[in-house]
Image (cartoon, rainbow, N blue to C red; front, side):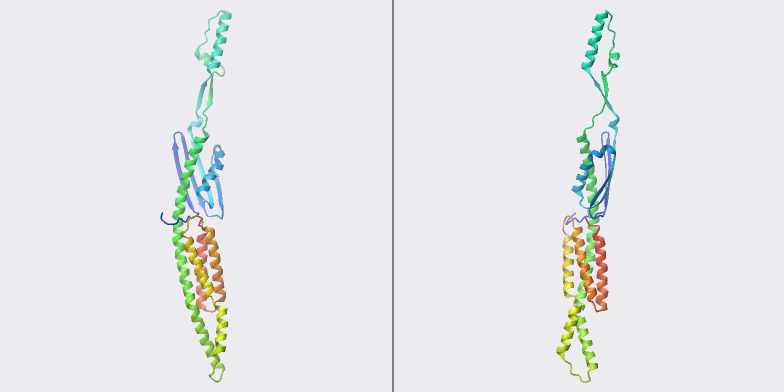
Length: 296
């Protein structure tokens, strides 16, 4: 996938492998979470590998609630090997020969009879090669993780496109607020002049006084700084979306700053159009914050 690879925290990976008499199935599910929280359900016989399995997961995943399910079957575990104790068998026969000479009787011990004497032939469970088993498990965990990451990247790309669309919409709203603000000043000045004309019998108007009142009013409702900062935050957010790695926390902080500026614009607004657009802006910011919660 070209460009940056934003990862969603939602994903699923599954891998199944059969090697000789061994079979393993691994399923990994992930949802959004502030940190990395991992839960592993597997057969007790594999508990010795839990620490190493967690290390493999950390190499692929940095955030999210991860549920891992492992099914493992090994048909060789019920097999046993026979061990022949040659030295002990020789010792038995030496004693039998000695007894034969001592009692002048034929040594009639057969091979079959000898094999049944204690410890001549013993059964041993097949030895498990722990490192070979770990390599088998590690390969399966790696493969399941790669599939999980692929689904998270795919979902992350959808999130990125959706967020860019919302940020573009926010920019349109900010542009409108910037264009509307100077018009409010003109409208206020015109209303003020008309009001003064109504109150004064003569038509002489103190222009400096009018200008002062307009400046005071403008200072109260001016949202230029907030609009500029919002534009900066929108641009910063878009740049973050083109970065690799975990950007979820950074994007969440930017969204908080956007919300702060939108609240200030709404509190200063003395115009129904700007108020409505500020409310729409807050709505879009809230949508962005919701989406950001799913980014790793």
